[in-house]
Image (cartoon, rainbow, N blue to C red; front, side, top):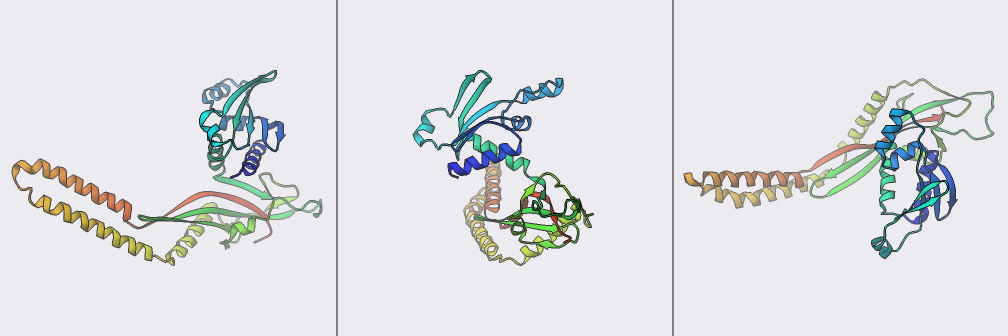
Length: 294
């Protein structure tokens, strides 16, 4: 990410959390965090537990974030955090760039808070009858990550959606969303149609469709990985079997048990490294209310 992309990402997050911008420029922002953003970013759990217990009005922190990318030598030789005292209080100054701890924290916060969202498409402005109500249908969108794993790894992403009204599955759901303006607030003059599917049934349909897709995939990589696994197992058997065969003396029983344990451990390590497997996980999901009846 370059500095402009970092700037756009950070400002977008702060706006979504309704933070108060004191100063904004192309190279940095000075912002007073909202309570939600302060809880997520300031690392003050004891302060917020005190606020929650006593009901005191919270005093959130103010940051001045610079998005200019410092030279590598500056990153190594100086702290990227400093403090400025003003009449309104203390301002914490930080450099926020790709690779910085603050940006890494923001990525984690956004990923955690955005794992499940509810969004509505904004209707075109000025084109709708103010006295009419437009029907919206709910879609369940799920971002699946499929991992093909052995001693090598390949990952694929599937962002699929299912209409909770009709059960239609859209495998190019991202294309359906990318040109739409989405908002977390229900727009005016919109009514939501009743769902024909529950979230559980919609998710089950997506999982079944993804499983059918994966069953038709090319698994030659798994055959090759299994062959490599057997080769590695045979190699360690040729090493350990003769050693164990010669440990028949009663005085060698303790040593034999130790060697057997190492042998089993090496087999387990080879299984973990080479055994082919397919893993499926959900990165994030959302309910998207879109105009129409499909």
